[in-house]
Length: 157
Image (tube, rainbow, N blue to C red; front, side):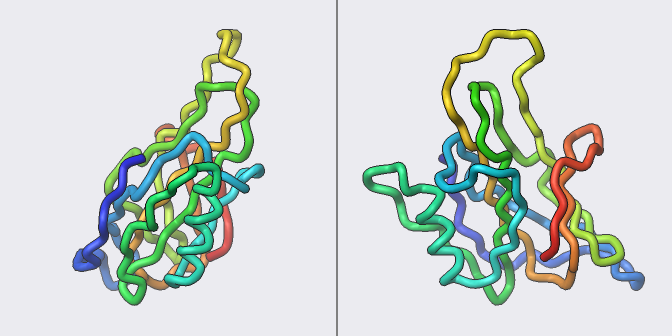
C-alpha cells in the first residue's frame, strides 16, 4: 500500500465562475478494503472520521499502520470503493493528479480495472478501494469516472 503525507499547501486553479482544477493525491490503493462490500464514494472531512474509516478498511491486517497525516482544515479524503468482487483482476488507481470542479460537482478520473470478459481469474473475494486527498473546497456532488469518461460512482458530499 503506497502512502503519502499531505502538506495541504496546493491551491486550486480556477476562474470566476467557480470552475477549478484541483491537485489531488492518492493516499492508498488496496485490493482488500474491509467492510466495503458495496460500491461507494464517501467524503471524509475530519480526523476522527478518518481514523475510524482507515481502521475499518485495514482491519484484516495484524499490525496496520496508522493513517497518513491529512491537514483537515485544508483538505479532505475521498474514499472510492468498487464493492466486493468474486474474482481477482479488479482494482482502482488515480488516472490523473488533478480533479475538476464545475458547478459544484467534483469529478475524479480513475483507472477502473476489471478482468477481461471470458478470461479465467482466481476465485478470490476482493474489495478494491482508493483513498485520495482533495483540497477542502466547496462542492455538493462527487462524480467518479473512468478513463473513457463513463460515470462509475456518484454521491453527495
